[in-house]
Length: 409
Image 1 (tube, helix red, strand yellow):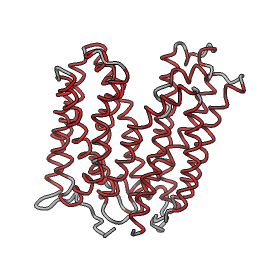
Image 2 (cartoon, one colour):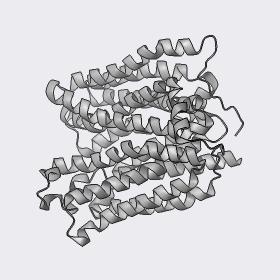
Image 3 (cartoon, one colour):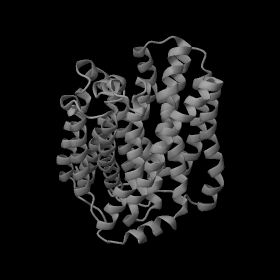
């Protein structure tokens, strides 16, 4: 096996481990925050179980948004990735472990718990974003590299929640302990991968100016925002819709969601490799158009079998779009600016995920599920239509958005 192939596998496993550890906490979050003292405090952040759970999740995402750019910038300025991934993973593990220890201390207010959560999120996002950046640094085609990242992300999302639910049944703090252990493993294992960061050092201002001079990065950022918005929408609104519309229990709802997650995770690598051969335009533009139609079709499905078929189609189309979008970031960013460029993509994605909660929940609550699916699917269609002129202008006759890295793996 070529070293790039081996490193691609190792890095994909590490991306999986970081995201998997994050998702472990989600299914039992209401029980977890109660265990951490949310039901025993007069904090404004814990007026109800729902409020406490919401703020616990928001604290991590807010830290992601605030610190992901810092990690990318520091990595590019110093010309190193590995030591910062190690630092972020180990510190993130400390954050998870500290949260698990809160009940034994017994005197930390819930605001202090949220502060620990912010610290954990700020550290974890460094390990996550920079490990993805190390995949960008590999030879062998940006589509293949980002396809590997996509498989890791999709698998982590698909497996983290159900396994986290089982761990919560054993002990509400068990997901925290397992997450801490996984991040320690990430910190130890990443040192086995060659750090291929370009050794040309630049000042922070030069890096930021370089990103500003590449306005076309706004294209994959916009797609990343909308794509993650749809993911947040399905995570919240989709789950409630299936249960209320079809009377499904949690187990059957999970199986229906798996109809999306399974093809979305498993097809990322071949779809990313496909985009290396045919370019990024068709997978991103045509894929997004069909993806938006598929989302609307899920909301219009009259029965569970038709909804399952629609979810499978949406999963396949999502797998077509996602790795090509991430690979486009690699294509457009200079080698010395990849850390900051990927940080920007992950920032847009985090904002999109939060937007999916907010937009989907608001529209569904006020106007019904049918309009919510129409709005979210329409946004995916709209971003594809709006960017068609950009793709055509930048790729006359040839596809400017093909991978710039054609090296053999």
